[in-house]
Length: 129
Image 1 (cartoon, rainbow, N blue to C red):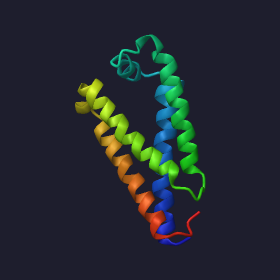
Image 2 (image 1 turned 120 degrees about the horizontal axis):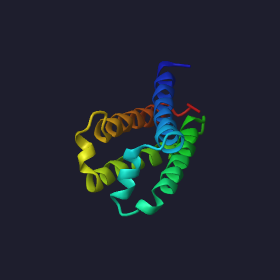
Image 3 (image 1 turned 30 degrees about the horizontal axis):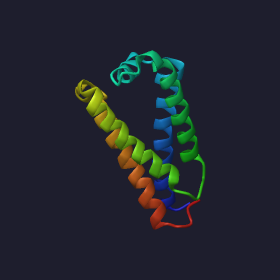
């Protein structure tokens, strides 16, 4: 495995890890009050636990797809769009979270940078599985 392939897989597995962790820990294993508050801010409070669980499952599935050695870059594209969309959602409905420690701005932008690194390293080296 050459350097570019290693860079690709470190970036890709890091993105997968973010989605797997954020899908499993604060949404399924220990439902975070912050997750509930973000859903409630959209007027969906009565369904908040179910929405959080569905979101967690979707994130886990996306994380697994990103971690698999697929030829398709579609999971990375979906991750990038989701990160931008979720950041916009927080900015619109829960802007107070944007100034908290370990906030969505830093997490989403850093993960988006990893998506970009995985994307360009794959595009530059077409034989990466």
